[in-house]
Image (tube, rainbow, N blue to C red):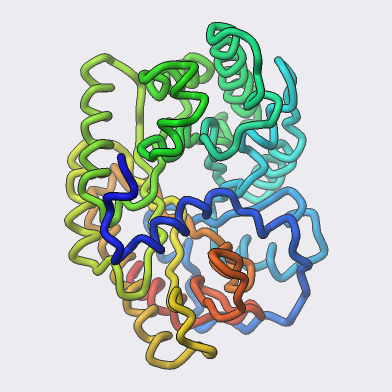
Amino acid sequence: MNINKISSAFAIIIATTIVSCGGGLETDQVYTTPKPTPAPNAITLKAAATFPIGNIVSANRLSGSDNNFTSILNKEFNSITAENDMKMGAMFTGQNTYDFSRGDAIVAYAKANGFRVHGHALVWHASIPTWLKNFTGTDVEFEAQVKGYIKATVAHFALAKTTDGKSVVASWDVVNEAFTNEALAGPFYAKLGPDYVAKCFTWAKEANSEVKLFYNDYNLDSQTSKVKSVVDMVADFKKRAIPIDGIGSQMHVGYSYPDIATISTTLSPLVGTGLLIHFSELDMSVNRDLALTSFTAERSNAQKEKYKSIAVLYKTIPSAQRFGITFWGVRDNDSWLRGWPVVTEYEWPLLFDSNYGYKAAYTGFLEGLK
């Protein structure tokens, strides 16, 4: 997919979404502990939903002193995704050498507090450890390293079990954002070949036959050409008996674009595959042009209504295909959108404000779930 051919009307949204999975802000921020605003409703998000509601975490964040973060996380959500700690760049430290410690800490927290864990992401062109990026061996040797990493990682994280014997890590984004110029120019495509995505899914399923395997990408809420590429890939996988269980639509949307009609139109063929559908990285920018220096009532209400509409739309998916909705952050000042394309305090994309106060966006999303 040639990104340069995509219309300029949403070029910024596309560019920002490419960066979003990197989560570069998380490790550099200092977290304060303000007093949270009481919930406006007695019912929580996870209680209102008939499917899992998730958010992102890190091992450092879960073990830190910000009790307000873990309090809201435990109260409102029942699924977690590691923002960075379970990516290849964080775990694959050398040839046949892995550091699972941060992922293990996240899984331990999830097990102790009743969360499902969604693994993110085994293979992504933007999260390759330096040693592998500079690998000087043959393509066959490179493939052996990637295959070994995928199988070792999936097998390792299959060990932690819930009380009913299921894996705490229920699923993985096996490959992330393959339909981009960057991915096509990257080492996985070059060294593993054009069928590398299918290879990765096969290796993951060989390591754990029960884990759910997802393909994850951005702009599946708006870009019909990319949606077609994903749907065609799924059809090809089914024809060749390549295992795939779900599609992650990242859903980094704006308050005005794409509109719900567009999101619904692009969602339909994804649902038509019969696979599980995960809104996997949901957030909503409200000030990408930086025209605002305060979060206006008008913009807040627009965000509220859009979040409500997204929840309502997700409920139109057949219940057996609803894997859940995961937010890409808890409070506004933790969002990656505060740091790209420029550092700014004037972006408010999430359900909670910087003091952990419940925003109108939270109320709208909750209303949509009911």
